Length: 467
Image (cartoon, rainbow, N blue to C red):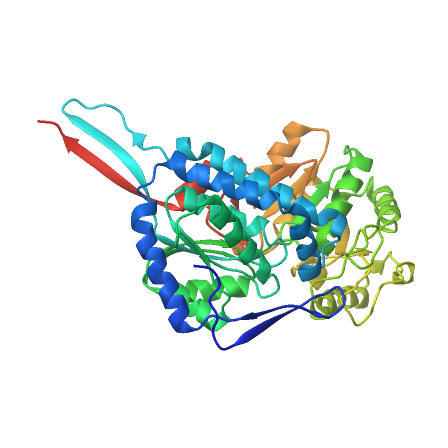
């Protein structure tokens, strides 16, 4: 069962040129109720299938998906604006994450044997939760979804995917790849839904786990929708991710890494770099190098292979980022990038030149609110203690980075920083062997790694007295 049409229609407006790229009918209540029934019916047989067989189906799905890399990359560019030169990288990331979780599934999902006790056998099985609803965003439309979809299916759950209205074709490409892999009917379905019907769907008693990636407000809506049902949630909600450059850092490597971390995907990444703290000893040199590198970006249409910075997803997103810049400038910050260097820059549209701000502090929105755009603030610091305090002065805690040659000191600082993932000398990367998680308003729960399977299963204890 794939897409189900209702009476309402949604349009996907491309940030490339403002044209309508895709039109889809939204599913009505009867249709999503039927999807829930189909998912529950499929669950009975799917959870009985041995993990290696589930893994084989998922592996064939990845093969089918990767085979369409070029067309999938083109669709990503048109739906959300990523430059075509980078769009295929999402397919590579999809494959890396999916294949890793497939490779560890049998071991990670095996029963837990406890210490022997004479006359008894005791163990813990990991049963599937049941029907899992996955609500995915547009900014990394496949990477965010694969984190939940493939592990959920490997664990024996059935899945209903509701993708963003900005990237509806992604749900359909998932479904087509699973069809090509021979996944049984009803095990994976997708629905194009309104926000209201999505809320009603996850309120349904059949749904036993929800994986949501999106805004803090969206996460709060999900929590309210399932309140009193006592089901589990995986919420990945955003970030204001910091980096700290110590005086002993490899400055060229730090600049190259952090400028990319700030501006890749036009800054539209929950784990992108949004604020940088630099030791006073190297602050000016870091800023000069970062400005020089940023001026080399080419802002333009994402279907141009020369473009390295595409539009934001919509004009309103660019307007929000510009408001933060204007607020910072009004409070005394300095802007280092002249937008006239970027001919495609549109002061009222989705095409926005990158911006580096100095003289910033935490009285400014650009250092406290999630920007989700090609803007980064760089603040001078005078000690490790000050930098850690500033990094922790946030409602978010998804990732944080320290750049230094002293790895032992980096680890000491990492233990003080409130974050889900701590990096040294890198940033803006998700390793599927590690748990993907956040603290504070960056979310709740975790995905990927062996722990990701625990979030998608229910432990069931077996306590057998032997006669």
